[in-house]
Amino acid sequence: MASSVPASADPGGSAVSDPGQPPTDAAVDRVNGLSRTDLISELLQVCHSQRWAERVADAHPYADTTELLAVADRIWMALDPADWLEALRGHPRIGESGGSSQQFSTSEQAGMNDADAVVRDAIASGNRDYEDRFGHVFLISAQGRTPQDILANLDARLLNTASEEIHQAAGEHRRITQLRLQKLLT
Image (cartoon, rainbow, N blue to C red; front, side, top):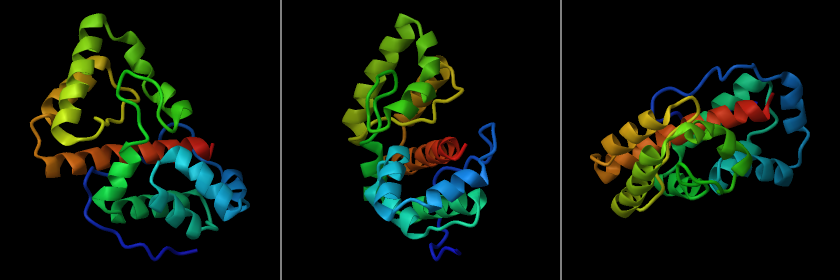
């Protein structure tokens, strides 16, 4: 099914295209077989934006994984900042557990297990400063990043304007969503 969702400006660079193992069409068949309600429930584990999950569910069935990933990405890009903020509320702080998708967040933040106390404390302090400045959790696609890289990114992003930062956070969430969808489909 072709999507009627328009492409829009790209706040965070290109979507992730290859997290490792390619998704299977059998997984898309499983997704296509879900009721709208069940699909929305699964999608909310990937991205905690109700509007995104509903629109992705409403666009199914999908011909293949490429179409599902492309439609999900276009829908994310067409959302308003309020929808992006809703999705951000589903994430734990970097270095903490919890959130609406703990099964994903735990593996995505596994690199934080290697952080020494100084870096861990600096990230915790930076998280508080970031939330005070922007009103939402600092989000970074942490998979494969070192704690030092995360801290450097956090420090640099504290210099952004609110407008710059919501687009930066949306771009990071875009990458996370694509990775999570690909995991869901493997």
